Length: 340
Image 1 (tube, rainbow, N blue to C red):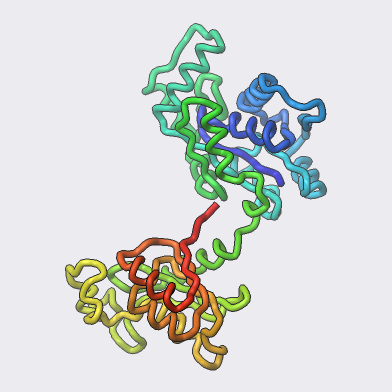
Image 2: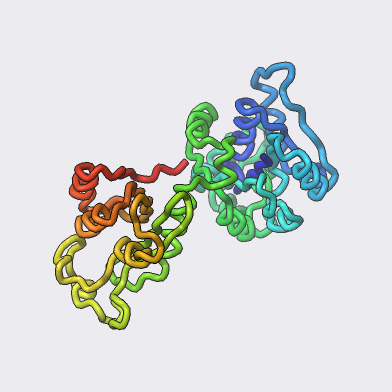
């Protein structure tokens, strides 16, 4: 696994790298031509922590391509770097490798400024930096925070948005940050490949984007043996005016969620998934239903009747307890998705 850490100045990238190096034996990878002071900080931090004699050593690479070739050939090795910090750095092909993980590290602006002041004091520099100047340099495309870290820019923010994981680091001590990191399973292979639950619930989210219901977007996926049988999203029946065009008076009125459901013309995502499956696809007997919102009572009884054996949902709903009772009595496994 190759983890690239990206983030603005004083967000804590070096501390996250230190955690991976010391606690999970990741090997630091450095590209001297583009290394930042964060890389130097890794060396300083890890030198303060007692480590076994056989601890992984730092490896230097002349170019991004050299690191990519090495990581591809040694994909079972655990490597961490802070020297892939722009879209240009990744464009050589890192994002195409299944063993590559881009992790963003961020922290509140005020917290980062306070860390900058402390860091400058520890460097014994006879200068400080005002919050206004910190913000100004933080926003400059090629600005540096008085030699504190790598540049921050809109391109970096764009890169961070594409990260597989974002770590928020408001913590006042490294030990507290490390405690938080221990809950994230950063070194787990599951970080590289989504679990079945994550995969199917992502499909639910995608399906929900087709919804035309004025109340909420919901998507559902019906699965047998980890194979998709059907998908569904909520909206008015075929041939009727779309909900978002006034097709359902109830959804277009100021009606509280979970009320007046008997007046709603919209089919729910779960209903559409069950109907789409139908007899020609073997029906829903013994299947798993994924839904990005907990099924309501109306859907729960239909899910039970059609033979679904398990329901996995992501977001809570006002009828969770009533649906849970129905599923428990019918022997249907019912659980809420817990992401890594």
